[in-house]
Length: 157
Image (cartoon, rainbow, N blue to C red; front, side, top):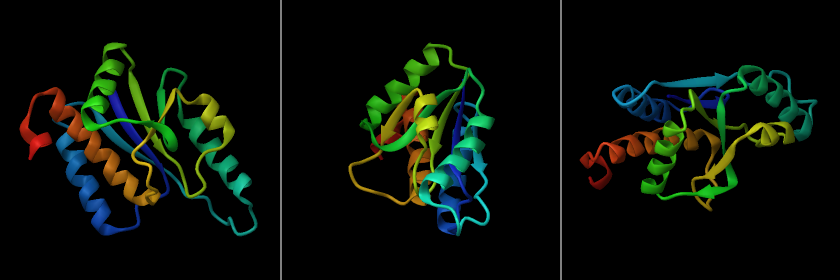
């Protein structure tokens, strides 16, 4: 099973890029993992929130295959502790999903068409984080899940 983290727009802060790179490299030892950037929209000054979400959704939905298991990072999603999240990933692996895609939306979130296509939603916290910071948190939690499943000490350090 391949795990991918898709995000709308590039990561702008070097400290976040460095952290993401660290965990991305570590994950390669556990499972196929990739990051995918959905390009930022250009010339959005004259677009409203709904139009921006719609255009971003078109880009996202074009990239998905029907077999992809899509999980949205969403403030209204289910919350897991790290051990339960590890079990969630293991369960998806046992169901023979070829690819799980975790998706972080843009500043305005997702359109209804992306919600309809998704297979589930996860929330990292009741707090609000910038979509830039969530990228690092998700990669670290996927790495933590792999170490939990392998009974490695990272989770307790």
